[in-house]
Length: 207
Image (tube, rainbow, N blue to C red; front, side):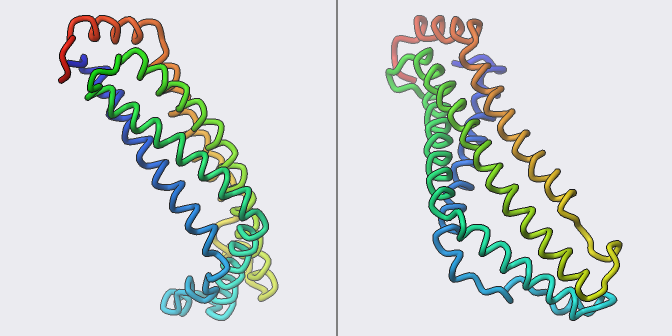
């Protein structure tokens, strides 16, 4: 039986791996099908009517979609490779964390080391993913602001800006990457390794 702090850390890491892995798979699907994107699908006619210039905001939404599609198409295969690696590494984190709870005869200390290495790999790949996302976000935000400016909509009405979205994108990348690094350091720490060695020694039978 795992001590409560270790159990909670394992469950949190398991959830992190599952979420990031699933997100990576979604990103791969998006990259492979982006050419089929309908640039009018994101329009919100009802909300646009509530704005000072409905035509301008509808045009801005179409420009956003085009910029999003073009940005991904320009890096489609590098993005697929990065997302595939990220999804694989996050899946390994998920499986390792799951096996820490139900080792089925495998030593937990070895599983913790594997989890740590996988988490470091996921952190590196999530950083690369974040850099690609930042390029996409800037292109989309720039297209939005440029289109509104062409329709003589004041900056105050333009909503989000490239700077705000860039900060949000970088912040998300730092947070997720930091969680993976934290998990890697936690599970490879000497204290946790010794804890797993003691647990393995005292639980010879499978749980």
